[in-house]
Image (cartoon, rainbow, N blue to C red; front, side):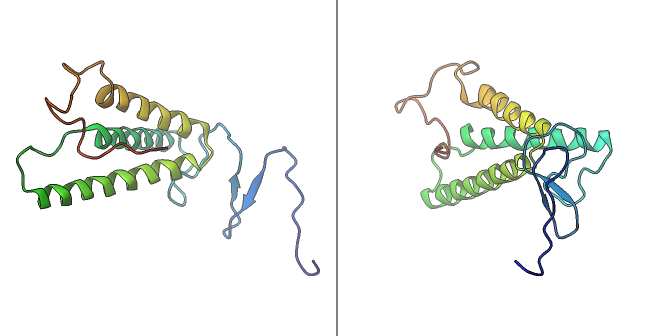
Amino acid sequence: MEGMDVMPPPANGTTTMLHPHKMMMHMTFFWGKNAEILFSGWPGTSSGMYAVALMFVFVLSLLVEWLSHGNLIKDGSNQVAVGLVQTLIHAVRVGLAYMVMLAVMSFNGGVFVMAVAGHALGFFLFGSRALKKAAPTPSNGKTSDVPPMSC
């Protein structure tokens, strides 16, 4: 089209996209600490802040699993109150899951590994039978407050 500037492809072979702020955004997985995760300019170019960002993603994904498999509501409560609390827990869980997804969309390999590791450890601690005394059945208790997310 006439009048439109067309950028040549990058010389290093990676696919990138131009932000309005003239920053390059990766469109393929890459390894390195110079990533932008969730917020503009965060974590920056510091290795220490990159480690904090990785731990943040790990904890977010761990919390998603905890909320997915936890029993936070006591039995015998008012049904309307239980429904409202379940709805609140579900909303928080979905919000955290979307934040993990957006962090992974930074296409940084370290962020991806930490998200998967957080979900794996969270499932091992809260969802698997490895640390449970007896598997819950309909007769002896519920499995979690909210139904698991489906893929």
